[in-house]
Length: 143
Ligand SMILES: CC(C)(COP(=O)(O)OP(=O)(O)OC[C@H]1O[C@@H](n2cnc3c(N)ncnc32)[C@H](O)[C@@H]1OP(=O)(O)O)[C@@H](O)C(=O)NCCC(=O)NCCS
Image 1 (cartoon, rainbow, N blue to C red):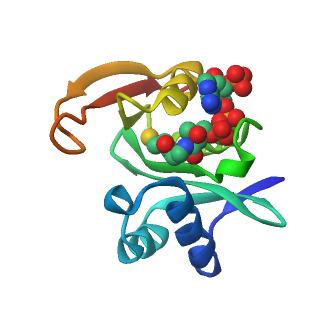
Image 2 (image 1 turned 120 degrees about the vertical axis):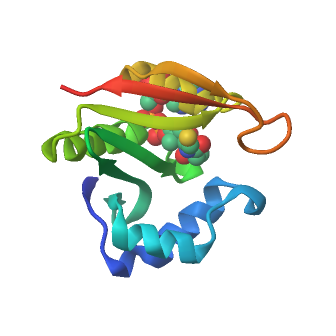
C-alpha cells in the first residue's frame, strides 16, 4: 500500500469511492470532485487499486481538509490515519500552521480518528448538513 499524489486518471476511482462512502444526497457531484482533483491537494492510497483518498488545500497559515474517504471493505487498517498524516505533512510543507476540518456530530468513526490525530473541537455548526444535522469544526496545530 502506498500513498501518492492523485492524477487525472484517478478520477473514476475517486468517483467510485465517493459513491461507496457517502449517500447520493450528501456526496460531492462528479464535477466538484473533478475541480478539486485539479485544484486541491489530493492524495490516494493505492494497493493495486485506489482504496481511499483525501483532499485539502492551504490558504495562508491554515490547511482545510475537504474530504477523507476509505472504501468500506478496507476500513480499520490504518489507511484513514495514514492519508490524514500525509496530507498534514503536505500542509506543513507549504507553511500551514494549523489544519481545520468539519465533521458530522454523528460520524463516530471519523470523530474517533480525528481525536486520535490530535484534532480538538473548535465550534459547533448547527444544521450544517441540513436541519438537525450539526457539524463540528475541529482544529489541530501542525508541527
Ligand atoms: C472515517 C474513515 C476515513 C476512517 O478510515 P479508516 O481507514 O477506517 O481509519 P483507520 O483505520 O485509520 O483508524 C484510525 C483510528 O480511527 C478510529 N476509528 C476508525 N474506525 C473506527 C470505528 N469503526 N470505531 C471506532 N473508532 C474508529 C480509531 O481510533 C482508529 O485507531 P485504532 O485503529 O488505533 O483504534 C472511514 O470510516 C470512512 O471512509 N468513512 C466514510 C467517509 C467519512 O465519513 N469520511 C470522513 C468525513 S469528515
